[in-house]
Image 1 (cartoon, rainbow, N blue to C red):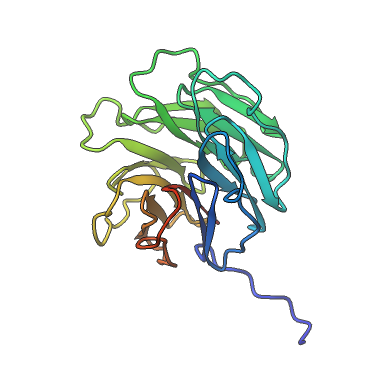
Image 2 (tube, helix red, strand yellow; image 1 turned 90 degrees about the horizontal axis):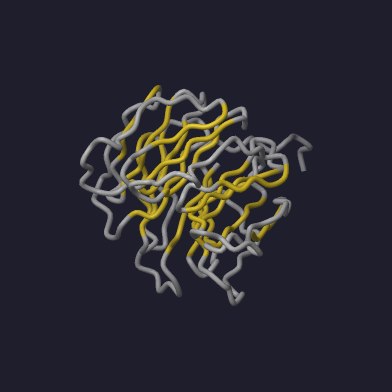
Length: 260
């Protein structure tokens, strides 16, 4: 061995897919650290988040159950709570020592060193919340609804929304830029709407063969990936395609994607 440190991974070289049964699929230089695919889940998995090191991840179920793998620490879950609405996603604190869960009603649950800055849990929403994105400081977050409505909390600035537009396809995810001064809304056909300093990204090379259920951005914010229910992955902007589960015999549909 040369004794030299290993070269740093280029942002955009790793992503993971999670299926509704808790199965995890790693691509590029992403490591596989375990899954919930062999467990009898009470409710389907709906999303995942990756640790800052890329050496671990969390999975979250619709009931708020959280499963930690690799260097991801377990800080609690909503699995034992009587939820008014199912959990739809999660986001990790910049420190990697906490995370948030968000419900379809916009209810937010904070664990570890993730702080609670507010929610839409007590509002009458026109459409359900579908996801959240965290500011770089970890002192705020945005929630996005299926109709393109955006709700900001903490130090998250509001840059606009699509709530007043008649979208052809529902929004399925929100992705923040590295600066925290912008975000993208991702629709079920892999199209996106950009706000603030989020650049316009190239459209998908081909339309998805199944509805998009999740999206993840590269660390440098120069592009993102969308994943369909069938496991197809669509790169947008300046990110590479590293593989997908499209065409594979899946035990359950895909539920989300995470990247670093």
